[in-house]
Amino acid sequence: MEYGINFKAFVTQYLPAIMRKPKRIELHDSFLEPMKELHDKFLQQRERIDYDLKYTSETICVEAKLNELFDPILKRIYIITNDDQIDATYIYGRAEVIQDGEIEWLYGRSETVPANDVVFEFGRDEQQVVNDFTVYVPAAVFAAKLPQLIFEINKYKAAGLNYNIIQI
Image 1 (cartoon, rainbow, N blue to C red):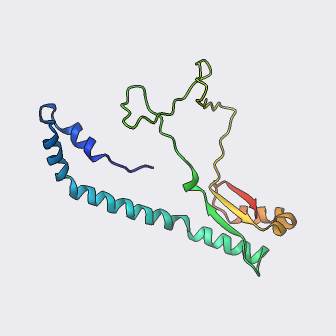
Image 2 (cartoon, rainbow, N blue to C red; image 1 turned 90 degrees about the vertical axis):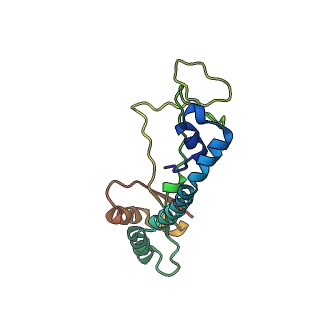
Image 3 (cartoon, rainbow, N blue to C red; image 1 turned 135 degrees about the vertical axis):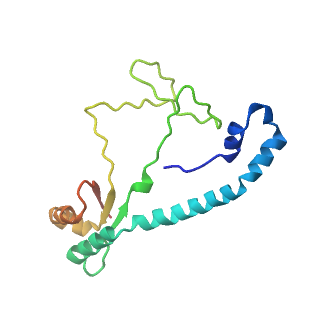
């Protein structure tokens, strides 16, 4: 989730139209300096918490258990959570004002699509699977013990989580 706030736009939006002069906007924007500092501290704290949440006790325990069972000497099996690898694209409505000029347009089946644009269509029969974590496994373990590895991961992972196994 994006937590960016455009304070200058906030001030401009909430000032009455008669008071929207450059010096007045700057004055009111300066009143929000403590709020800006607090927002920056919040973003820094959020970054630290997101980093800590990537390494939950569950991830560490499953990783340790898999290394203990399948690679006890070198301990090359590791798990990476994929929550930070999902890129979100904001879809603008027709009535919204776009300030930076970056627009991602979506086109349906019946619309004419310009040459360089992309058509995003997901129907009921299409299933989007996003893996919650990825298990990286050495080639020797991957080739020899894949069914046992899948069984152990399924036994220890939380219900409802999807995963992917990649050979290293």
